[in-house]
Image (cartoon, rainbow over all chains, first blue to last red; front, side, top):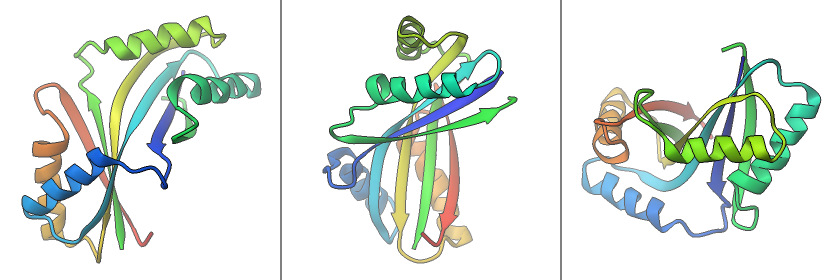
Length: 83
Length: 83
């Protein structure tokens, strides 16, 4: 059993109006010094068995195709084995 | 400068139809052994200065109030200093 976590965030050069709204709200609600907020997505994928090299390649391909929009988003994939 | 990451995921007992749809798509597109997929949100908050105990408390309160819906979601907050 392995767990794979994929974080998908907007590229730094893409405006994030939701993050901007959250930044304003955090400041209004009492947190000072907030210089930036970015909102993204997190996927937790549970897999039976080990993550072989071939499976890792498939995962990377599908993360790029299915979970992220590579025009505006970056993704990071990490494998957390044995959970 | 500190970076705070807040991960917000549906509670395990709450159905996640989006995650289920992604699970089906991953399987159809060639990844076998996918036993579960959960979709959640990730917030990256950049803060000027250090995260004092008081600021950490404020952050925790606002994460619970603003970033997560505590009825259906769990959140995890971690501070990554010095980035």
